[in-house]
Length: 211
Image 1 (spheres, rainbow, N blue to C red):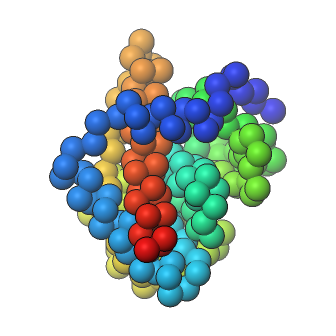
Image 2 (image 1 turned 180 degrees about the vertical axis):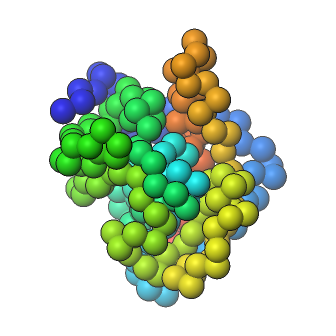
Image 3 (image 1 turned 30 degrees about the horizontal axis):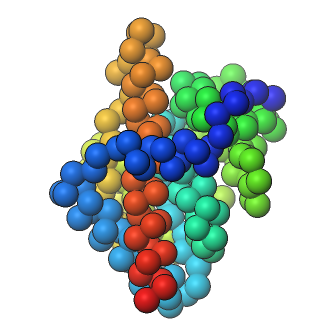
């Protein structure tokens, strides 16, 4: 078991939304994503999101966990997945920064290359199985809305027949900071940005569904 800090995940989620400035251009992209989710949700009463980056190691994992948290926070029947165009591992620094804001990681299958985690948070209704995998791994139920989180994945990911739609929502890769004094700061910055933007998407979504 990887222990968590005393930080409450919900408090971090809300605080990130208040502290993060989202540009108008970025808001327009997030609104398009929220609009499509709302349309699909009204029709099917369920939505699946698949966050995709090259290695399924950092940014796509942030996307999956925070959208999963946002769905439970918003009480919506939305399922979140992640995958890559290559398999590596759920990077230890990604695990650490998520752990520091209250996510609990329990190793269920040990592997030096690619351990499998059961991931939860306080009052979670459903846990997430976290590990690095291809975007079309059977655990990622389809059909889904594909959201690419890095330019490489967007360029190299082939046509996905299972995708209802595809959006490109890139984030700065905190990988540049690995092994430096800036590591904790860089991963926290990505952690906060993804949390804030998922808050924005799901808050918009709730308003659209209530109309």
